[in-house]
Length: 218
Image 1: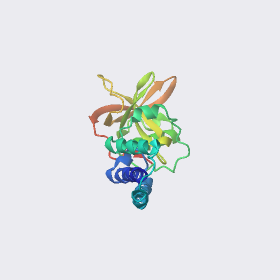
Image 2 (image 1 turned 30 degrees about the horizontal axis):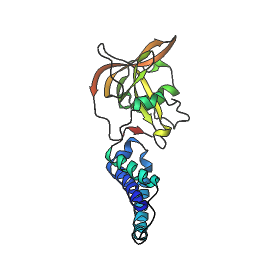
Image 3 (image 1 turned 90 degrees about the vertical axis):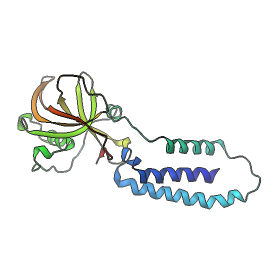
Image 4 (image 1 turned 180 degrees about the horizontal axis):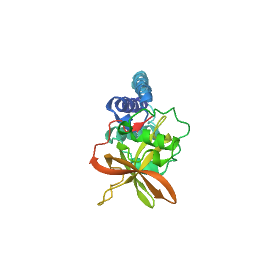
C-alpha cells in the first residue's frame, strides 16, 4: 500500500503541474519544482513495489497509508476552486517594499495592480482625476462600503497571498457578487470617504469575464 500511496501523490503533483491546477494555488516560478517532486515520488513508488510484492504474507498496511491514498484520489477527482474574496478578507493588505514603478505607462494600460501601487506611492487623488481606467479582477466585498475590484499577489502560494483592491463607484442596479470576475472600463475620480479624499474608479462599462488561467500575480 505504501508504493500505491506514493504513486498516487506523485500523480497528484505531476497532474497538477501539467494541467494548470497550480495556477490557482502557487506562483508559476515553483511549478517545475512541483512537477519534479511528482516524478521523484513515482520513481520511489516503482522502487518500493518489488519489495512489497516479494514480501509474501505481511501485516496489513497502517490505516494512515490507506487514508493518504484516499485523500490523493479525492485531490485528483476534485479540482481546486478557492474563493479569492474569502481569502482576501482574511489576509493583510500590506504590500511592503515594492519594486520601482514605471510612471511612463499610459493610464489606460495600467493593470489593477499597477494602479494600486501607484496610488500607494503617490496617494494624491487629484493627480489621477479623469484618467482612463481599464482593469480586471474579482469582486471583493467591503464591510460598510461598496465592493472593490481586487487581485491577489503571491510570492509563493495562497498562504502568503496579499489582496490589493480599488474602490469602484458601481452603476445603479444589482451589486456585483463576491468572487465574480469583471473587466471594468471607466475613469478615475475623487470622492470623500471617512473624512478623507481617495481615488475611485467610476465604472462606465462592466463586462463579466472568465477567471484568468493564471489569476495570481507576482
